[in-house]
Amino acid sequence: MRGVTVSRLIHPKPRLIHLRVDRNDAANIRRAPMRAPVRHNKELLSVTISAFAELGLTERLLRALKDAQYDTPTPIQQRAIPLLLDGMDLLGIAQTGTGKTAAFTLPLIQNLEEDGIKASPKSVRALILAPTRELALQISSSIRSYGRHLHIRQAVVMGGVAQRPQIEALRRGVDILVATPGRLLDLVNRRHADLRQCQYLVIDEADRMFDMGFIRDVRKIVGMLPEERQTLLFSATMPAEISRLSGEILYEPVRVEIAAKSIAVDRIEQHVHHLASAAKRDHLAKLLDEPDLEKVIVFTRTKRGADQVVKRLARDGVSAEAIHGNKSQNARQRALENFRNGRSRVLVATDIASRGIDVDDITHVINYELPNEPECYVHRIGRTARAGAAGIAISFCDASERSQLRSIERLIKRPLSIVGDGPVEAAASSDKRNRGGGHRSEPGARKRRRRSRRYDRRAA
Ligand code: AMP
Image 1 (cartoon, rainbow, N blue to C red):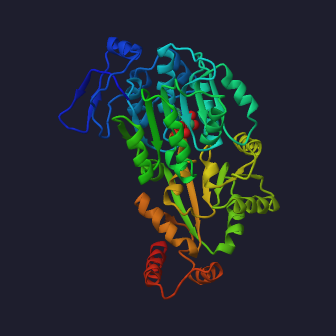
Image 2 (cartoon, protein in one colour):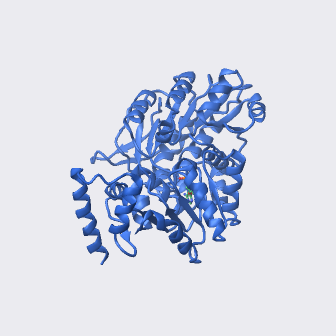
Image 3 (tube, helix red, strand yellow):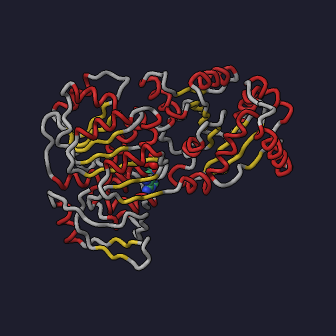
C-alpha cells in the first residue's frame, strides 16, 4: 500500500533490512489517515526482531497472545507484522502451519483499532477472503482469540449455511468480514454488504482459490473495493495466474517467503510404504493397531475414497469420520470437533477439505493415496508438526503412484525413507493392469523401472 515513511536502516547487503520504528514515528504512522506511497525493497526481507513485544503490537494484543501461550513469533510473524503495521502491501508465500493467520490478523486488528472509525450500516472495514468454509471459520476464531481484549466487530459469510444470520450480522456494519467469494458476491449484489469503504483486503490461500475456480469472483470483489487500501495476498505456491493477480492488485508489495521445505523437511519424519493398491486397506488397519498413532489424519484423493476408508475402518472397529466437500457444513464441523476433542481418533479428508483443519496435536498424517500435485503433499503433512511440534507422515505408494512420489521427492529435495520392502514389482504390474496404466512401449517406462530397482537397493 500506500505506505508511510518509516525510519529504516538499509544495510550494505541488499537483502537484509533491519527495521527500526521509533516510538513517536510509530504512533504518528499509525494515526496517519492517508498513507503516502513509500519506496521500499521488494526483495525477501530478513528482519532481526525476536519477540512479540518488539514487533510494535499494542499491550492488549500482547495480552491476548500471552493468553494463547504464544511466546515467540514464527518467522513469518517476525517479518510481516512490522511491515503490515506500517501499512505496506504484502505478498506472502507461505502455507498453513507457519503462523500466517496471526501474521495478518494481529496488525489488521491493530490498524483498525487505531484508525478509530466506526463501520456504517452494511459496510465492511476489512475483508478477508478464504477459499473454504473451514478456513473462513478458522480465521474468524483467530480474530476472536487475538482481538479478545478489543472491541472488534466481525462476521463470517460463507456458502452451505443459511443466509439470514449472515445478513443480520452485516446489518450494523462490521470491522472485519471473513468470507468465501461466492456467498460474498451474492450478498453484495443483493445489497446486504457494501465494500466501498473497505480499506484492508486479505486474500488467503490464493492458489487454492485458483484451483477451486474462484479467481474470477475474487477479481470482481477486488473491483468493488476502493483503490486506496492495504492489500495482502497469501499463497503457498505461485502459479502464473496468481502471480498475474498479485501484480495487478498489490502496490509495491513486500515479498515474504517461508519455504515449504522448512515445514516439510525439517520437523516431520517422512516415510513411504510401497504396497499394492489392494493391500492398502489391511495395511492401514494394521498401522492403526499401534497405540502411538493417537490422532491421525488419513488423506484420500477423492470424496468417495474418503467415505470408503471410513466404512472399512468402522468395520475394523476404528472410530473415524470423513470431511469433504459433499458433507454439509454442520457435518464437517461436527467431524472436526469430534476429532479435535478426541471422540474420533481418525479423520479422513480430501485435499480441499483439509485446508482449514487446525488441530494442534495431530501425531500422524497418512497419505492413503498420494496427491496429484506435489504441493498438496506439503500441505497435507503440514497438518502434523504444527506450532513447532514434531510429526510423522506416512505415505502409501502403489505402482500407479510412483510418478507422484518422484514429483514429491523432487519438490522437497529429498527421498522419503522407505519402510519395509521397496516397490512391489509383481503387484505393481497387476496394479497397472487394473488401472489401465503401464504402457510398456512408452519410452519413460523402462527408465522408471530402473529407478525402482535403485529404491530396492536403498531399502536393503
Ligand atoms: P496458521 O499457520 O496460521 O494456520 O497457524 C498454525 C498454528 O500455529 C495455529 O494453531 C496457531 O494457533 C499456532 N500459532 C501461530 N503462531 C504461533 C506462535 N507464535 N506460537 C505458538 N503457536 C502459534
